[in-house]
Figure 1 (cartoon, helix red, strand yellow):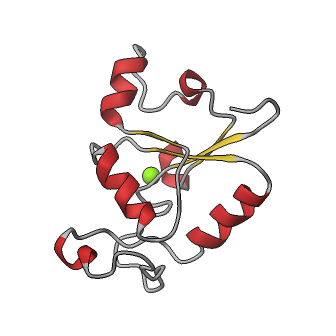
Figure 2: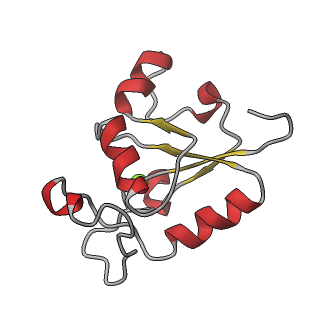
Length: 121
Ligand SMILES: [Mg+2]
């Protein structure tokens, strides 16, 4: 990480992946392959917000409590034309955080964590 660069992490479920969302991002790369290796839909606006933070020279990470594989999460964003700088899933979280909490962004030097409101209830 370059000095002064802000690392922002997004949650997946109910933040970027909304069940039965009416408006979702279009797949832009590897369209045929996604028919075989299916991916979930990303909430409409995801690309715009990632592009904005990228232009602001921020690092973009995913931090999820789910067990989706790193390979799958990379693939999910790649087909939408988004390159991630880092991914934390539940496996990586458990290996690095001994506290019994669902997420601990400081363990991964994450400056800003973007969550859905239900994460706090
Ligand atoms: Mg969530």
